Length: 260
Image (cartoon, rainbow, N blue to C red; front, side, top):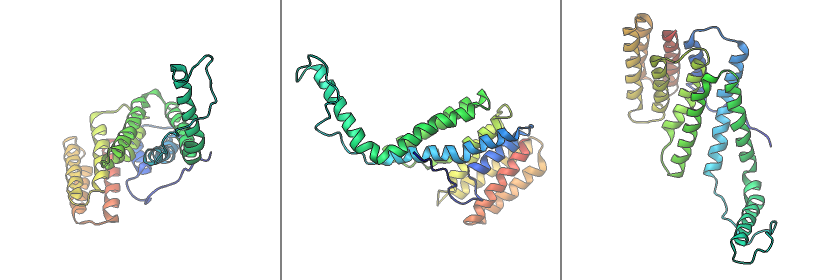
């Protein structure tokens, strides 16, 4: 079994790496370099890999159970048609399907998913029990995306929360108690990440959210940074393509500085 841990997508955009660094910066507390590296490895490599393997398993077309089975298990005194005989038949069909169909096609993805499902929470919780709620939320978002795929529905909103909000919360919550404004900022940038994928009204969603953050920081007394966010909000309306991604990334770091 070989894990595939790679960067995905453009580097200079609001991706897990930058969301995590923004959250870490927003916390404003001294931190251990080892802690930073471990959590960065978690959010930029392990969590995307976990979702990639889960998505592969969810989207795969599995072969139905075979009609005949391997008689690997026989209960004593079990007559054809009895409950014990039916249980042995069902187990035999499952083993035949697992060995002949599932494992050759999806064994790598399944094994990697199991490994990451243990490794990722272990790494996160080794840095503090306070990350428990965030890890559980990440798992819930993963399964929400699975249900959306199975139902043929769009899951881009859940994916944006998974890729932006969760890394931001991990970076912040690892070093500081989570307050209302930091939490709302993480959710807002998750929504902005989703807005980048919406072709029609996405830019107005992002414009409005950045402007709301600017007003919140103005009310909190962070006047210079609030003014910078307002300027970015106005610039975002006329921006296109990669310019929007760069402006959103800059807005994330201005927000992180305002939260310190």
